[in-house]
Length: 69
Image (cartoon, rainbow, N blue to C red; front, top):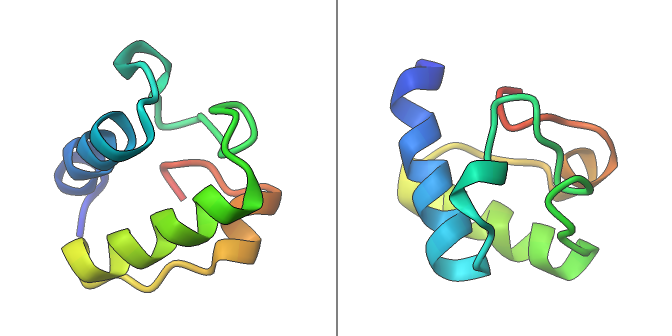
């Protein structure tokens, strides 16, 4: 999937489930910059896999991956 296709769905999950302000959700945002702890990142990874069918490594997401990654 292209970033343009994934980003709106990621934004929807982050705003709807995790109450992240939409203005903070940028391609270069990290989970840390969005103030998501390791448990929230693990839950996010599961939701993304279920929603988009894309496997997301919660450890990599938590450490340094951006939303664009």
